[in-house]
Length: 246
Image (cartoon, rainbow, N blue to C red):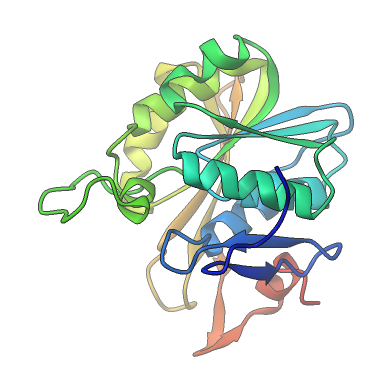
């Protein structure tokens, strides 16, 4: 396998360490939620991290760029996305630091073994209602709707692969926050830190970042709001920093 870009693909600059990522404009491309999660999560020296539903590999690549962890793995069920992610890893010469594994999130603890990871990240599908989808096998539909895995699956497998006191980081919709916390507590993944993301300071939040600790004690820290735009088309200073533009 090589790192060549196919004719219908594009190469996007990640604005950090010279890294780039291969994407297909007609398939599912990474969004701001993945970038914000990479800024919220941390992988310390000597730690191993697993990204569940890695898509084109954006989170392992950004986490490797921003952290001093030992190794990063992305798990992806869609063969085309997994293959594209592997080519991005090769393109950035990160094959010794990042593995991309093709497989099902629902089987993560069988694939990697229980209590095998220090950190888990996931940017899971947000939407439960998938009635009326024209093509449920479409890459975008699979990424956005709970067609192949549920929130419960993601949280269960995150907890199962984490070592005691291991950390999980999720990005999701605020409207499902009660479900998220219920699932986390169900699987002994205690919510420890939360940050709401607002498009503008006077609008309702449209994303939430959550950190949980396997076997942690009951105390939740709610961090200051993260505001995306100062004005239409103008990112706030903090967003520019997270994107590596400052």
